[in-house]
Image 1: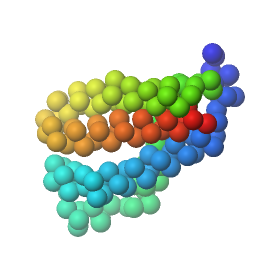
Image 2: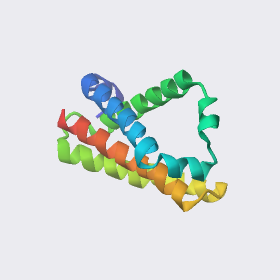
Image 3: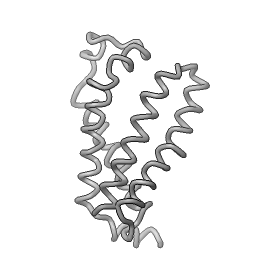
Image 4: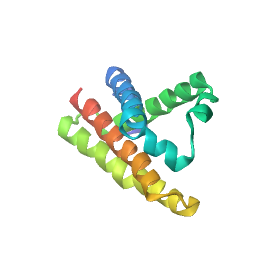
Length: 136
């Protein structure tokens, strides 16, 4: 499939839903599930996090999640099903994102816990995105 065909076959509704799924997962992941661990591993405090621009932070996050969903949709293609989409998302997260994040964390001397929180989010998020994209 060429690039023009890939763009014409994008299911914009599924891309939007996959984007939203990633955004909501991030709220759970970095909130009640692993928020305290994430904050500790990176030295964040509630006060420090309140200093950031919420609109900029969430705006950039949603745009980046949209790009990830769009590219994943083009990658898995219009003929995929839920199983293929789920597996494609999982392997993209594990095989590409988590491995490169791991390389960065080794050079940045980050902790294993920090890696597991961030890489875990990427793998789970892309897996859910792939399931959504494949199902539609």
